[in-house]
Image 1: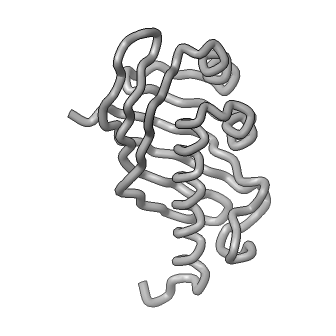
Image 2: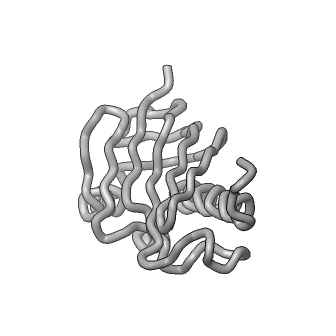
Length: 142
């Protein structure tokens, strides 16, 4: 990539750190921080193919049906295009949901958007404050 933007490597590292921070927020069950990190139109598709809106996911989290003991993220790859960043990776989760063990490895795709901010032109030292996750799609790794 000889013509890569000079800020690309730093932006990629910042977005990776943002994704790692979201895993820590989820592990700690900091629902307010998680809610603030999600775009209003956010949705997720879980490992069984079920779609949850932001409101549905937050309701599930507030009901304490999800009990994580650890969430570790690895193999992160980031693609940046304008105001969007796409992150792929693998989460190793130790948790239960509705009393059932759901521990395992999950491959995920996260889509982040910074409304009106070109990520490569933003201050190199930080992720824009208005960057929010638009979606997260999970698949169990067997």
